Amino acid sequence: MKKKLIAFLTVAVALVASLAVAAPEAVKEVNIGYQAASTIILLGKAKGYYDEEFAKEGVKVKYSLFLAGPPMIEGLSGGRLDLIHTGDMPPVSGRAAGIDLKVIANAGLDPAHNAVSVAPDSPIKSPKDLKGKKIGLPIGSSAHHFLFLLLAHNGLKASDVQLVNLPAPDLAHALETKNVDAIAVWEPITTNIELQGKSRVLADSTKIKRAVNVYLTRNDFGKQNPKLVEAFLRATKRAVDFYRKNNAAAQKAISDESKFPLPVITRITKRYDFSLAITDKDIAALEQVKSFLRESKVLKKEFEISELFDLSYLKRTGLK
Image 1: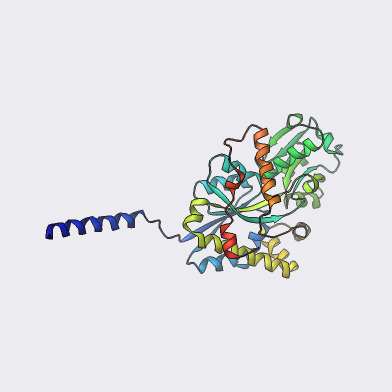
Image 2: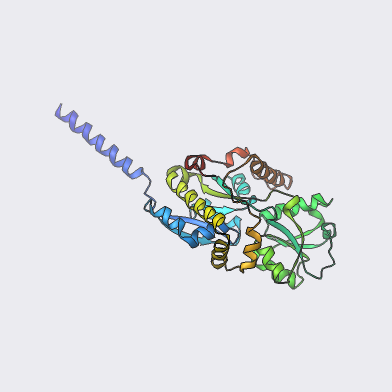
């Protein structure tokens, strides 16, 4: 009996030890990826809301600035980022590539978020004049999808133009030096270049597409750390509430944090709907992105668009 008891205890101790090893380490730092278009994250960062909400969970915040969404998706996939903000194309492309990511909330709707611009003295007067022209843009971005829709809306195909893949910060120079005939990008870059007198907006996304922006997390991070995802959403909602009650102060904080001039931030934020809720129209817009990828023959893997969303975090917080 004594030998059996010893054997039992040995197995039990070994089992407990193995479970302890297998248990995930407690998160000590959360990594948030953002870009110049991440106005609410910029505001929440400036006001200290993310630091405060994560401190309640005993976690520090690390912020990482990116030039566009696609590299943030790579960072999310590699575990270097936990929570990010992007436009509509990167999450769909990422999910089709097998990356297990989830949309957790709406990051704000700006009807004119994407635009195609030309030089102020350009002979191009309408989107139909883009035929045969060089267009600079970050390929794989929301601006890429918008350009596709704009061309189709004007009886043109993607093959009717020459795409030049450029980082967003290089577009103004490319347009100014006439290395390209037009550029496709997002806010606040479009307005910044325009107010500097370096471009003229040819067409924006107002009547062409629903320019959805979203907040994302890695699915494994969210499942293992739901309270941290909810802390992110609470901090984000605090920033939204501050903006709604203090427009001028919020715009100044976003301008200071983003390094974009105040007139640029003031103009674009006036257009925004900062609701966190995901609507059926938002889901349909991301389905439209998936259709674009399929038609372009770059959709690596089919998936149900519902797989892209996990709104349980938003539901538990009761935020809108």
